[in-house]
Image 1 (cartoon, rainbow, N blue to C red):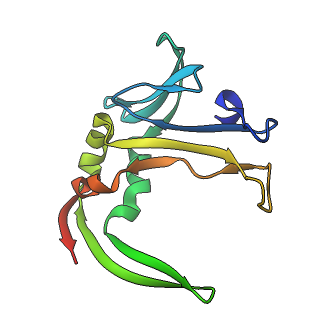
Image 2 (cartoon, rainbow, N blue to C red):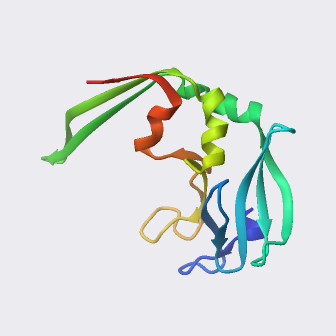
Length: 165
């Protein structure tokens, strides 16, 4: 995707970057050159990444994830525990004050994940960038990891039980 759809980084023009958020419920205009979205195909049990020109004519529909791939990748979500903390540095050491925690149990994502994806509640983020100035690898390509993302306020839709502490 970096080589085929990326654009030169503003600080390191020899490196192509491809950063975008994609949704199933709407097109995303990317770098003013094309439109991208994800498409859920329930019949083939696949989620496609679709590229179109600015008029909506499909140019590429070859990249996909199977429903099984998505469900396998989401296995780590079966029981989720989120902790909010305040961080303070004292004498060069980080100190944490844990202020709240939430346990998310009884994952129902295998049923609801695809539906939430179709609704645009879950998105796909591509994060193919470049290491910035002042870093050990400045100017080198960096894959920050693409993935499906859900906003914190919507996480509970993937679980049968939510316990706040």
